[in-house]
Amino acid sequence: MEKIQWQIAQVTSIVQETPRVKTLTLHLPQWIPHLPGQHYDLRLTAEDGYQAERSYSIASPPERTGEIALTIEVIEDGEVSSYLFDGIAVGDPLEVRGPIGGYFVWKDTMANTPLLLVGGGSGIVPLMAMLRHRANIGATNPTTLLFSVRTSEDAIYRQELELLARKDIHFKLVFTFTRQAPTDWTGYTRRVDHTMLTDVVGRFETSPNCYVCGPTALVENVANTLADMGLSPANIRTERFGPTGA
Amino acid sequence: MAGFFNKGFGRKRESAPSGRIPPGQYETRDFPVLTAGPTPRIPLTTWTFALEGLVETPTQFSWDQFNALPLQAFTNDIHCVTKWSKLDTHWEGVSIDTLLEHANVKPEAQYVMAYSYGDYTTNIPLADLRNGKAFVGLRFEGQPLAPEHGGPARLVVPHLYFWKSAKWIKGLRFMESDKPGFWERGGYSMYGDPWKEQRYRSDD
Figure (cartoon, each protein chain N blue to C red):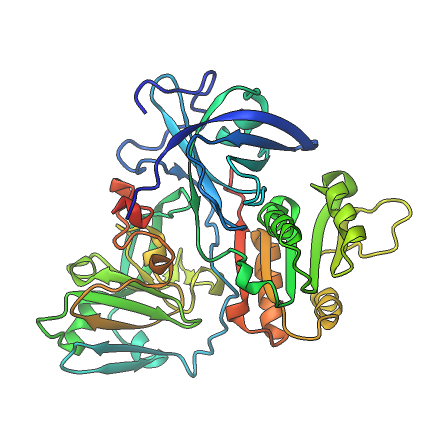
């Protein structure tokens, strides 16, 4: 098998998504089409040779050829994330390799099956790649994103998601605000729970493929609840961002 | 990439004791949870553990029978392919050597497929499970192993990346030749030596 090679990418744009989250777009000399849900490994090297590696989900769809977007949340005392957040400018080089991962991925062969995405915080990133790709291929499968965020300020990609929900009658966007909801908000204002999942899953006529990504506690709870509700564990794919994702 | 470095980047974390953190890893004091899907519920009354495949004596243990086997204490460093390492973890469990005494493995058996509740599988050379190198862990840090960490019982093979340490272990199947398990079919390393950074199949 051909080695997944390290390559030096160049940062071509930086977008501030929320106060703690930025999206870096990287131009790759050796770009390989990815599946939505896959990630890249990123390696930082200090002048003294010290290295640190982390994995970051790809936010962009494979239709954006030659480049990838990585959305990065800055973690307190995060050795890698804080450098990516504060120490990187457009034009800087970054060493990456990928795409990696073959399980937490959404494939075109799934485009006729309903889709349930449950994201918490920056767990939205791989789910966004799925939604962007799904829109690009014109899939019309019933799709719901249940997105748990602390406040509206923390909702990464909020405008893009709302636009997508207005344009696509098959896509339903459901927010829950766990700390502070917008003033005119009439929707959910609590952590994702059994009742909420029953509401959301109940709208599907047939069992959806489920992708759950976010902090460990949310993922554990959501995945186990979906299994308790009778969805097949084989159709519940999880990806966890633990407290050590720094 | 000789000579390449990121301007202004430097070590922020205190360095772990030398020689204990493999390349590309960092130390964590937490115990992160990583699983492909939901956590299976396994009642102890129906729990079983089997030794099968290339063995003279196929064997199946109930929970009570398994717990009647000699328990040993183990202290190990563990290394997850998602880049975290955790030092000095304390376990109690049953050594694979103890289990092999019951099954009488045939000489042609060279590899093992560990399989779990929830249909997880992972492949390991038999030699990597012998001579005190691996065990079935029942207790972690003095407590029964929590379900999200693989309880009631998980395989622990600390010298390989931690996905080889199958959670919710249900049995070991002894095989003549190597076959990929769950993550291995998805492109992860067949062997998974953290010191050689064998993360992906193309690193083997």
